[in-house]
Image (cartoon, rainbow, N blue to C red; front, side, top):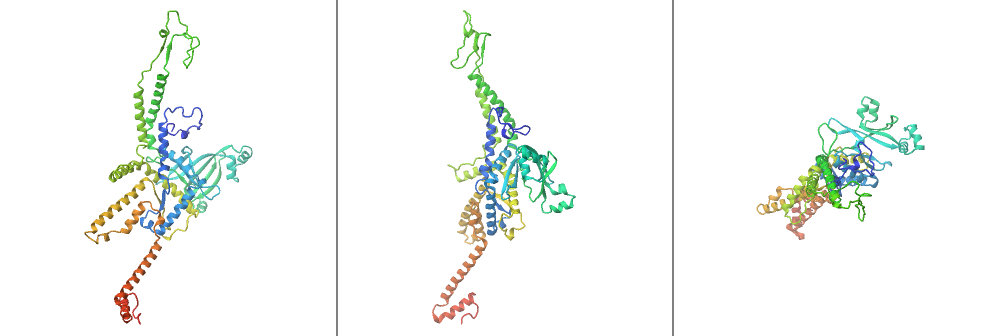
Length: 521
């Protein structure tokens, strides 16, 4: 951590930015590389409407009524997330850099102190421990924190120890160690029938423990496990994740610091070379600064060059710089800095552009894929469940009740998929049009309405651009009625338009089913 994220390198000691901070780092390239990659998730995955709510069932999701509810719910969730007091951007930015440097951030989603919104927090992994269930999912988290006596008494005025109340009056800023435990109710009250009935609809229990006085400050049930512990890469049976970017370039980072130290010393020797002089030659020491005057005791037959010499440095600085550049290239590749840039389509054919986009997708997927599945999906799921439990969304359509809700993301990789649908639609239409010249019935083999809808969605069109299903039915009925009137007029014209031929026109309408029998009298 000292090499790539010095501000987080306080696992075994307290962080104290002062005169000795980062003195062991001679080259900041690894720190800058981590900073660049750590800014990528927010810059490329969380711009604009970067997520959509869905059930994962395309047929159900594309129902205009359901799609409208999804769109409204997304806007409500986004409003709560990006409300200034929610701290979403700050918490996720901190977690992004933990993801890149350690591969294992820790976040929580809570109600704010006024209970009218959400609050996102990022925690240092050194303060947290967790356990996994039989399916490999984290369902038990414990976190230690230091809280002031003032804040403890304000949050738990009835259960706080008397010593803490005294400190709140005389030393309000004195800190006490508090542990937060979030775990399944069955793990602690599995045999207690009364407690299980109490938390029947709340599968998780939240405990705050005063570690100094060994007392429980607060206990409550939760419907949602509100800790998110995403892991970039894991190994079997190990609950802690790791960052392949940092692990892979750790030897290169150490070598880079050694090379930087050697080159720094060599550069100093080349600019300010060491000197050798006869003992007691100079009266008051050698003044090597600009304008310095040095008095030397020389014998009558002595020359200064005979008793004083400058040691010329003949090190291979160019070779050292080449080695340093090579190590920097390896670090850049480890942090994917040469791969996560969208290609420009300037002076490229459509085929070349598509090939470059496919290449970018293959290179970016190992980084962006785990973020969406391990990080964003879990974060949004907790957010949605908490808002749903607090009835923040409008009434859910009957078709969606009882279904699981998931999320679709609108990032660079998904945009490429949508553009591929648009390109496939354009090519398909051209092929169908060409085939229809030889077989006029050929277009009937394809669902052109669905093809068009999918292509429009692929462009990133807003869901409210699509007409609601009930409106579509009404329009279909109106169109059918208009077609019927047009057909009636045509039949009347065919049956006769003069007064002497009205009976024949009515008979033609009866045969067409537009009026009941005996309707013309």
